[in-house]
Image (cartoon, rainbow, N blue to C red; front, side, top):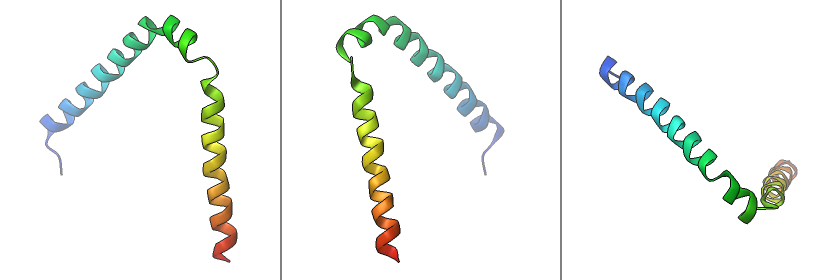
Length: 62
């Protein structure tokens, strides 16, 4: 399916990508706290909306 070289590349890419994302996030942490205050409410609303869709799908199916 995949060669060893492809698997090594994928593993290396994932490790470097995650490390870069952690570095950039920590660098901008103060800006995130300042400009994205209260963004958790949007995440909660989005997850609740997805939950409602699954709830409706379950009861309409029957």
